[in-house]
Length: 265
Image 1 (cartoon, rainbow, N blue to C red):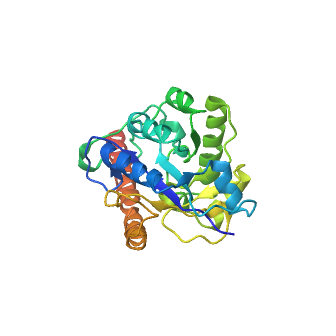
Image 2: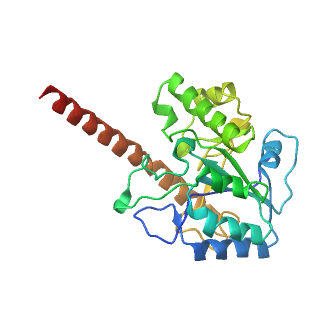
């Protein structure tokens, strides 16, 4: 079994931030135009899964485009560009934060970004964009209990079914963090596929490998001549994302300590 190249974007935004996941709308449009001009075609989610389980062989010019987190900027700056080129994509959304600011994340540089609302997602269904799970609140699954992992996965899948009327077959693990435990729990929660990031593929449909597209990505991301160095830089940057988890945990601890101090006064 072989996988097609799977690109993983995050933010496509005009507003700057102190992070590596943001791509400017202009750069994103140029990347998609270059990929389309080179003759690449995009795969739907079920086609990627079919490749992962050996039911389909990807053509040499086929790839998949995905987005993690489901930021609102995608509706103005990314989805219309894809539609104009006849490209399809899968957007993995944090369901508890639909239509809300990204308070699950560390606000590097002090800026917050809004997520797509359910009405935004419904507007793009049937126009080449599919929506799947990125859990309910975006925790690092490997650092919470089995019950917590299952609840995150199950609540997100049910929310998508309720709001969008589809049974999503896939989940993207936050931060790409998943071990055999998380893959097993994802299957138990009703998913047929799981998507990681910046890791080698082991042949499992529950750990589909993707390459992150960060701010330094070339005009032909993932599939161009610089794909080797790009993959290495992406893997290093993804490992550094543990800092977000640690900072969040420190902030939560500080908030709990403050609340306890106030209560005891």
